[in-house]
Length: 226
Image 1 (cartoon, helix red, strand yellow):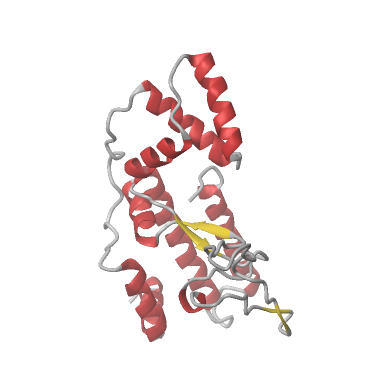
Image 2 (cartoon, helix red, strand yellow):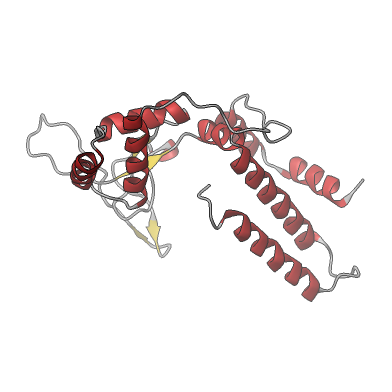
């Protein structure tokens, strides 16, 4: 049995039931394809308005612009190109339909300690211990102006569902290759770190190979957002 096979077998048997149950819960019945796709997914034909709107939407998202910024820049772009630019709602809806990714907004602590999901879902105050001593205590909701008003979260975070995100990554030719390269390099790194120092490889050599692996990972992903 090779070192890689031994590592995979050890990692599988050492995983706790909690981790295995969590993986099953998150991934459901999804199985990663054995090989990357040969071609990119075939997308429906877009109109000039849809194509330019998506380009504007992507640029706006990367720049972390405001809603007002999207609208104002869209007006300038529409006037300059004489092509209708979709509203922010329409652009988001189109992006969701094309990618199959629909974001979820989750309440979070204003201090970024936790998200109110999972075991924290029913809480109304942040339980996180700062410096291991003092509880954060930030409220989940803003103070109500009227007793009958609905709860409004102090802060929210956008979350992409796990399974649709993984499916999208492995359905794309380039991102699928990068994901597999990262997995392979990380496995090699873990194997190197698990090797006993008594073997022929010296501690210095292992550390150098570990650094090389990290550099390779960075090389794979420096021009991609995965």
